[in-house]
Image 1: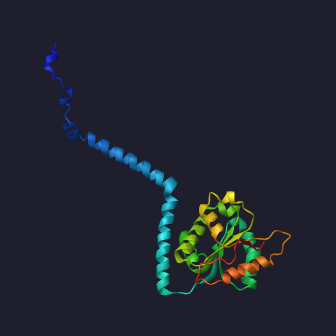
Image 2: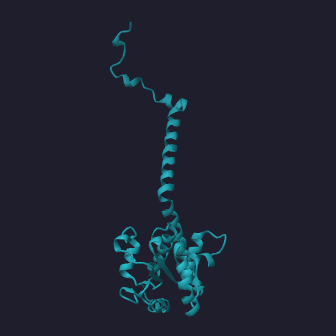
Image 3: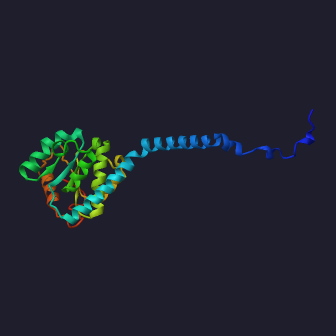
Length: 234
């Protein structure tokens, strides 16, 4: 039987760290821990931040696109890019196009008609917004629920704040209470500061509405000013 006095009072002195390095177990532990943390971080970024990172990247590309365009001073290809949800496509083709293109003669850029096939959609959006004098956002409840529509109005807002020009027109197809705009902080901020036009109800004549849209499209780009102080065309 061993005598307790044979052992030193500090038993921790017998723990040799070198053995962990010699057999590689400690190195394996560190490597596996880093791999697990990296996997969790990658999963988090992919599920929650991938759109933000992608959008930031394309905003940077839009900034470079705008800077390059200022140097070349190329004329705009379209008078306005129309941002709308697919559920409102019928209104755009039946109501908007016959008046703005047919009667007033504006050149409009539309997703399904003018986007370049085979090109990434975010690049098509960037080219459409910066290749048009203005952007018309046709806003409805379906529009507010669309992720791509959100990207379009955010990029158009970026151009608005970057250039400080009157390049954004908001068209509301339906009455949307302010509380429903609360999750869309940028949209609510724009509505409070910008001109916005409301599509008239069934009993009202749309003539005044289209006249106001024409005035908004005719407005120069040199100043970031509001044509109207509130909803128009009602």
